[in-house]
Image 1 (cartoon, helix red, strand yellow):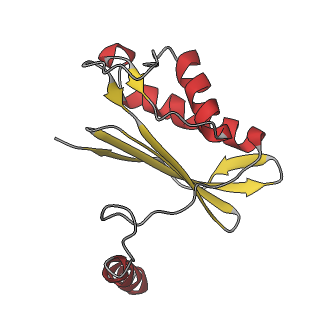
Image 2 (tube, helix red, strand yellow):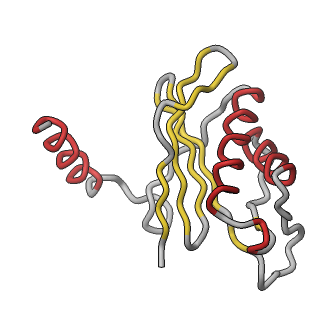
Length: 142
């Protein structure tokens, strides 16, 4: 247990050593994954979002992106009953939904975030399958 605490403290200290490249944030290239893997992770994350964010909250505004994960996420959110805000016109009731899929070896880290909610989960990739490797992390913000 002591080693785990020490590891967490070391990681927290090293987080401050990242090089800032994009307006104060360190940026990593999005993970390139097979379409089936991206779709399965997007489907799982969309269903987890529906457990935390009511569909009646308003339309979701996603970044205009053409990655397999972005397309799978938009499709899964629509299937889950969410409205997706389209176009460049500002929609005051639209909720900005940021998403990220990062790779580290055979693991993928997926996250979704709104201004008031953050969801994250680690997946293990084996062939064309992605299996959750961690519980869902949920952070609500005030």
